[in-house]
Length: 181
Image 1 (tube, rainbow, N blue to C red):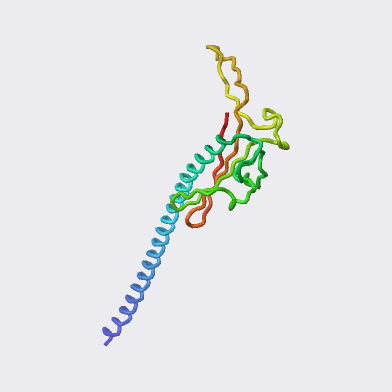
Image 2 (cartoon, rainbow, N blue to C red):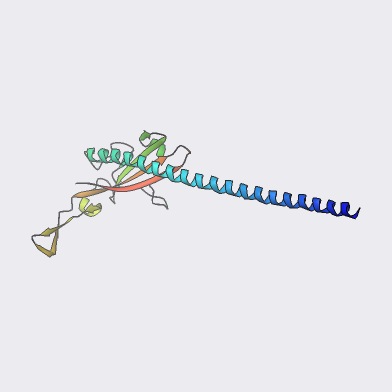
């Protein structure tokens, strides 16, 4: 009889050990599934960001064509353009009503843009060379590389800000300087 009673506690211990091992394996499987889910979300976010940047290039091409078509830089041909520098927030983004800016649909993304001439002072800008940001391109004279002369500063700079709204409501902002000579 002692033999039978000694086997029963061993069976109970075996069941307990198996239950503990199954619990540990279940927790490990859940942790692995969670890590896989986080990796998938991270790669999806990177994909959304890359697609938003590609969509912003279409907006940049559009606004560049619009800036080149501006006849009088001292007047605004639409809400998308300002003849002087717009006020900005702490992040350096212009404070505008984005719902009034032109919209371009690129796949599942909505692209809106605004451009402002980087000029200070009241309109009309009387002296663009002093009031506006201009680009000067160094030109080397003959074979003497130690002496540089600058082109006349006639290439005006425009700041372009593009907002891309993604399918999940995410927003990406891209800023660029474009030159009009």
